[in-house]
Length: 599
Ligand SMILES: Nc1nc2c(ncn2[C@@H]2O[C@H](COP(=O)(O)OP(=O)(O)OP(=O)(O)O)[C@@H](O)[C@H]2O)c(=O)[nH]1
Image (cartoon, rainbow, N blue to C red; front, side, top):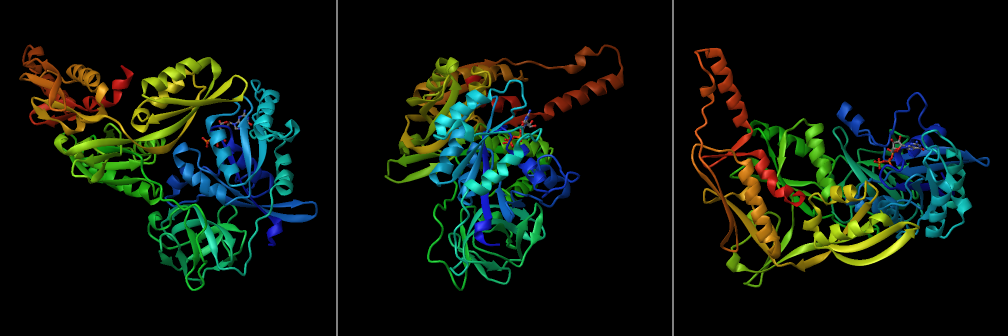
């Protein structure tokens, strides 16, 4: 097809504003998916993936659309919904010339609405504003159209008001796409430049790269090369999604489609990389390649030791489709064998945790998440550590630096004070504010990442009755007066309970932790001492008194089966305990470090 009959676009929205529902409707009205085949939210194909074991991920769908006596090819590219995947979002946007900006007419502009909009504007995308959920009684489309109009600098009449759920007005979007979004540029005669904007692993065809061809063309007989990663490969197949994988003879400049690479890991096929031809390479790669770096780290351990292999297998499987998840085996004296995992951010961590629990049915313990610290040594060298256990001896350390983030929060103005207080409590620094809409304020802060990885988002939501939204981005490493806070149980340091904290908080955190542990550690047959220590000093101390626990004393008479039952019950209770030396510590205690903020 001639490129002037192609339109490449994506849908950007804040979470839950209706992106997937709208995509479904568009596929339906263009006849890409028949009504009968219409499965709700075809673009969210995680369930399908799970059921079939192979992936049918349609995150780039070709729709045919007849308009004004001409046939058009509309490529809809899906964008990931979470802040932690901002980089992936930016690459998906880079594959398009335009974007539908979907805003919920009951909610208005939210943090991701703005974050995604700014990404799209940076890439010079044409924006088509769409107000969704106009069927809801609580919708205030006039007000929100006015807000959007002043934000985008376009007339109120330009907002397309739809109900993606009911299908109302959705048909008005297609002509707008054809008329407003420019066709792709590019020349089939130039050397090949194809941008990878997503990928997934397929057990038969290897890694499938989702590509947008900018220049040149490619066939399945060509030998190809990733320009940043330098991997060379011969494709197994090339094709398009309509909405499922459909092989074609070639992909040309302007096209969106897939290359089945035969590669075994998504790590060899990085989002943002440029694919070219081995024997006729492009002079340079497309702009914007970056290797996303994990920012948040935590240990993941099976509750039951025998689940270790299952956990390992589950992580391997998750990593097949998620190049940004990293893990390596780790042993902890308290939690035995597990994995140290790295995530892009707190939402990424939650997603992985949830998938391990729900999809793989695993009972896991997550240790307190940490960030990656840069430790400057007195010797002049520096090292990065992501676990308090790896911190060098205090005497060797000249400085510890930690990652700081830019943080944006949008909230109704009523909660202004409460949000300010929350961020201050987390050592954040106020930078500026803007009013993207009446009664809504966008606050910008700088904040240490370590302060927002535990319970921050939940607290923000509860303080603002669910109305605030946030977005954050790495800014820089800064010196932070950081120290290690250790916990000693019966004079033995317990690695899984150690943390790195701001010096001025060490004392209060140490005290809280000790009193919490005192409540959580059950009485044993002997006295147990709990201490918190930092910089070589004991900050706080408590004792759990000895107790002789005799479950059988409850049994009078000689009912042997009842005795057996009680012993059985006691054994089970013990299973959820971890032995540290000869002391039983419940799982909960390891989470205590995490939950200090809540007290
Ligand atoms: N009443 C009404 N509900 C809608 C409409 N569009 C979407 N919804 C509902 O809003 C919720 C979120 O819709 P999704 O399409 O999943 O939103 P999304 O933006 O894709 O959400 P994420 O995938 O989480 O980013 C669902 O419960 C939809 O049924 C609409 O036009 N009217």
